[in-house]
Image (cartoon, rainbow, N blue to C red; front, side, top):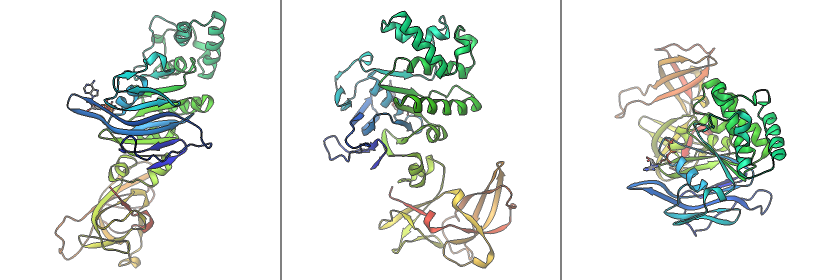
Length: 388
Ligand code: ATP
């Protein structure tokens, strides 16, 4: 259960079960409360008893691999589909339950799609003002709000252009402005940057964060890109197979993953499966490691150690706890860093399993060559035992 800065994930806790509520600011109502949400499509369970609490003004990303249920969650929040079980409350008001949901247009939410969905026959200014005109605001009011929003998203010089005359990043800004100008209570973003090239994507991540800091609209942001999630979000909700694996601030989820899936999906890691022998010592085929972080249960356990946490040490430390001799299989130069794949040298041929291969991330200046013998130090505080 993660509970920080406005989001509480109850994982697969059934509705009605005890919930540890997290309300920053002491008693502030959650903007959005998903309780035991389940949604099936034929035989596919797209969402399986998902519970999540999102506080006012938080930007939460739903992160996970293709098909894990991110978009289904967003569509349920938007009211495009109904749940098969569970409910959604918005500021304490029930808005979705099986067979009875508030229509999307009555939820005061705005959604940004992958494709931007701009009106091709309308100028930038007309596109941005569209939602305001639908709401029958007066002409002066519409013009004033559109002008202010053009300024915020830095498009004031090109208000009279049509979408076809804009770059991808500019179109994305129009989509953002059009969603924000109606001052929605909740902003839903479905992979909003996936059509942009790498450079623009990076720029727009900061743009989305800047706009969020300016407006503090409660936002739910779907992505499968971990960098995008890390740079934009207050909270990351990692999903897998229609369930929440873990939720929390980016630093916490990265530093303290609960499961092998989260450790691997967010940042990548070296995973080893061994047997806890007590006292924090985990036995593998041919060697033993001390684990100083995570939760060690009885017997079988998995250990995770990130590539950048492994260090090279001198031969003088051979034989010390958590120092493993290894042979370099290959190296990859990545600019600032170098990835090294090194196979543990267990010696004596006494082991049944293949020797483990570690990925180690070293500063690019460290000279390491293929075939070289090195000694790896795996600091116990970074050898994290995973509960799942
Ligand atoms: P992606 O990143 O690929 O968009 P996602 O995490 O958003 O994936 P969802 O779109 O929520 O995943 O889909 C979850 C599961 O539900 C998938 O197995 C998908 O095939 C299935 N699914 C979603 N919508 C439908 C539908 N309308 N009909 C049938 N199956 C669906």
